Length: 362
Ligand code: FAD
Image: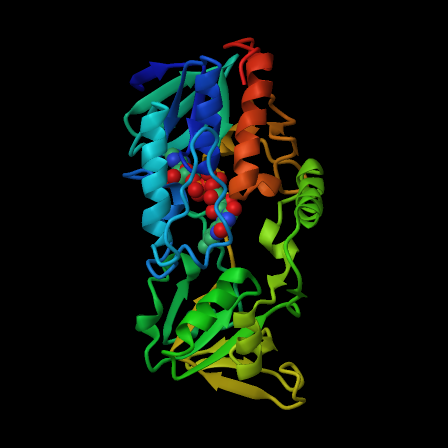
């Protein structure tokens, strides 16, 4: 016997940028809904970003619909400035966010959906999933990994460079987090090595809107085909700035190919694998996996939405296999600007499909 917690038209899961945008547009159309969020406080994944991440280093935060984001000082912590903006936003628009509520499973129940939480079950006609990726750090596996006697951590566990003082550190990963963390911790570390699977692609020049659209288009093609989305950043390449240029010159951002194995004391390249033609090894105290995140969708497993391509096929934000369900902040909309647009279009479609709320507004 499960306790009925409530009945509503739409449940939104997650109160990050994507969930809040969806809730804003649901409110505007007068749709009865609830936003269930696992965090203790407003902020989505920003609440958990490492304390040394300052506003100056984030790429640019797009404001939420219906409230300007006054640019915080460059030195402000991202994990304070953005959560504080989200908190004011939720209050201003009186969004029905309930927290902390962790959704464990969503089940199909005839025309309805049952959204299970520890206290019982919510019943809804439609679902907007906005659970992001932060809770699913991706750890690849390499031979010997479990024998390593030093410390291994993921970007998601990173708390700042001080913990690396005097250490020999391997940073794995070809994205912006890897390069940012390397530049930040190298002055503290005794020695660093940067390893990536593929040769990094450095992007010169400004990140124009046309370029952004092209990148988003590439990710969109994948999710339309039901493939697992790549991160938008993985397609954009790495920004060649004054800071990265200096780090390339100083050797901090000198990339090595991925090692052949991990040993108890470090990492090893077979003959030729490191590019020198010789076998090579690096004794390490720490391996930092800056290897990205995956979409957090396990709670949707009972709905069997995954197709043969391994991903959930979507058309825009609508799940092709079940039009009552929309994924926002997913694939091409996994950025602050993309999340805004996804929230709006998911609501527009869902309102039409379920014949709820007002079609006219927003
Ligand atoms: P999130 O912010 O991750 O929110 C998801 C919410 O869902 C969380 O509150 C979580 O607790 C909740 N949740 C998850 N699972 C459940 C569950 N089962 N039940 C209940 N609640 C659940 N994008 C930009 O546009 N500009 C940038 O500068 C930028 N910098 C970035 C820097 C870093 C280090 C990273 C990792 C990403 C960055 N991004 C940036 C990407 C951007 O953060 C995201 O695309 C966007 O903020 C994600 O918003 P979201 O709403 O999809 O998810």
